[in-house]
Image 1 (cartoon, rainbow, N blue to C red):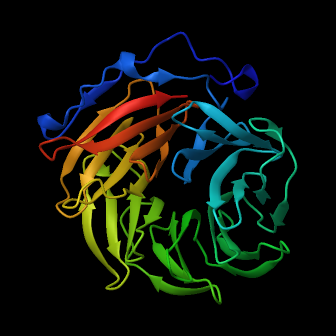
Image 2 (tube, helix red, strand yellow):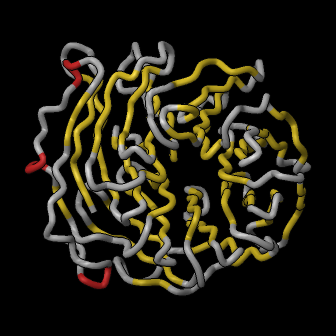
Length: 352
């Protein structure tokens, strides 16, 4: 169990977990009593999460820290502190074994593991300074960092020197998220101007701007084959509140996934859990997590966690795990699997 320095103790109030699915056969039989509960790792809203390897997640919080932990063991590997304001985005580079964070203090920081496992590290390896407003997008690839901000700009940084290689500002391009496109010298970027943009990182030039949606695009993810981008939107009362699948080759909308009743805060492609079906996952301000059949658009499983508050981001692990973050400072780890009848379901395993 996490020690007291890793966050405030778990509240005595126990949230009941309700499981509902489409269809009914996808309902999980895992009860609330089966959920392992560890000491909370963050003391404020958790804004961002990414996977690290097969069994670790990296999260960033309004408590100004980012934390790396093994979810199955309930063990914190490292906490980094040093930002002066909320951590808004996190990223990880397996090639560099480096961890990155963007913040409301306008800085992007690179971190390395400290010498003490599970301890607190305050030493910043490199700081990338230049944005004039909060950093809201962050991606790492090709020995470069790409960041975006509410200052309407996207910047490209040299990791070794910390120098800004390029800076492009577009009016009303209030960046919400950036993701590297696997196998390409390109990043996908969503914005409050309702657009999805693809940037060529060789020259930091807009390569493609997709047709504008009706609602703000809040987050994005890229498929492992580099052919698709998934975005999510804000909304209320079921208006907007969708995820959208885009084809990078045809530059067209493939399909939309509708069912959330409030803003969809996060979206993710899932690793294959079967040879026949591909799935995506979304989470929203309505406290629900949904699994969708990527090709049929059907919502095949849904989970509601009462008391979780607004769900802010989601990350998928190669082991079938999902980590979902919330504004109330909690993190929820679930497993996505198919039963013997080929029905997809979720199991709530761990809560921090």
